[in-house]
Length: 207
Image 1 (tube, one colour):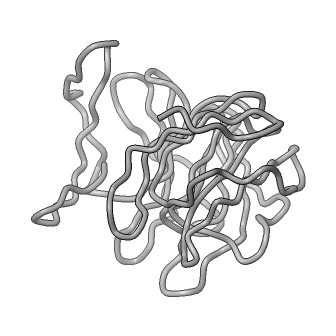
Image 2 (image 1 turned 60 degrees about the horizontal axis):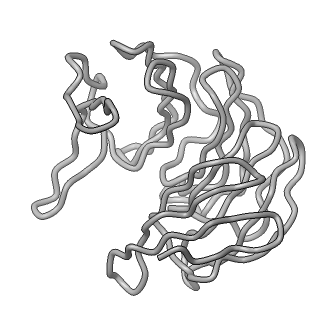
């Protein structure tokens, strides 16, 4: 999934990375979706939600070669943060257009979603996530002001942590609650190349 611009085109393709290059998988998503949430690995992944009309609450499971539909999210949305694995995932906040940004956090057990502790007020979209279902980080996001916020999830509730050095949205996150990366993003309508390294004590700009 995803979109390219210009011109604005929404895609359904799935691509696999082998450590040095990308190849297109023979089986794509069942339709074109953008701004989906995703978590897991190359052979065991989940994609959910998306910016279609109406906003999607669908969930798809990837087994390394094809996608299958599974249990719907409780709150359809796009631009949410994500963490976890194919059998123990987490989504948080995001945009359920046309209603306001949601604070809803949901846990995935491999077949269905359940609600858990709400994301901090006022919620964000186009934020990043890292970690696991019971120990996750959320950072960055929009709407304005563009966020530097970092919040940690302990399996049931969220708490504020050290902010990023550079505010941005549409960034990506990798790692754990002990060491994570915040990569890229958008600020002032411009795509950025910022990378920051998270530890529980601070975030440090790498380049």
